[in-house]
Length: 452
Image (cartoon, rainbow, N blue to C red):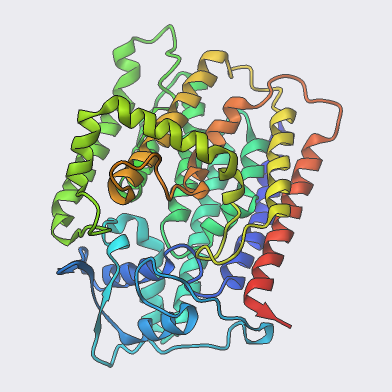
């Protein structure tokens, strides 16, 4: 039915305007770890696929203009250091333009946080760097071009997901139009690929489950998206398992499980290969903490204690993670409570609105979808535990709400109402609240970084 594609049309109408607003209004280097992602991208664009380790640092030699632009905008090139907020006249939004400095002697940059990532997640940004160098763009405009390419990638992947999704299109559309999704898509990093890829795996997985059919094309798409996500952020690999359960009665278990198991095996092998190739460049994130291998050994030796740590972590964090989704900049833009409340209300209303076509959304399928979300949540906690958590800590710190964006559609579709739509205008109200959240968030960003 033509009406089934209304959310797709509304997304294509609104998303480019909203995403580009974040890309251009947020000052350079003011998205999460953006300076590290820029340095890593520049290194890859120079055909150096792995970082160079120097003592406790991991990075590479790059043009000096990158450091000048970074220091001007956020005050330091130190990885994960404190970020400066420069308030400027709004008329000067594009005034600063730092030459790249390719003709000058390169300097060494430490970007150990981004050195672990494979080149797969940086393809749009590498293209932007090559364009910036070819056309003599400033560091700032090269970064903005990379953001715009990220926006285009994320919009394309979400659009594709929406066209495939058998039910829950309005739910995914509202999530896609909320501020956290827009801000992630408009950053110079891997978030656009990870968010869009997560949406695509959710949509195609549900499509395969409803149709009870894999095909060569579907296998290829799931494999490409699953491998790309695994090499970017391995914690989202379980999304390839969306179509696994409940198994169709007419298909043998081995035949039904073969495609996702094969994809998972290939993705795991490629991830292991990348870790081996890149092992020489990895440094300890915090020298005072145990090594990753020591942390993994502790988990294996104390599984029940570790499960208790995860449980305490989410009991502590779940009440505030929804608001933490609305922390922007590089944690420099304060949480906008009005935007967070409007966004949460939009999600609640669209879940109540539900989808009358979701006849295949059985209890068994809902349960399996939620199991996948829980597994991803456990993997996110584990990744933070082995890299940032001190021994004996009662809970795992530094888990951010934005880490859950790639699985948010899966979780909310699993929880949404099934049946005839209520008589109340819940969908228009949800869309209106999403746009109110956008206006409030963009207003907070403008007030944080600009004066009139």
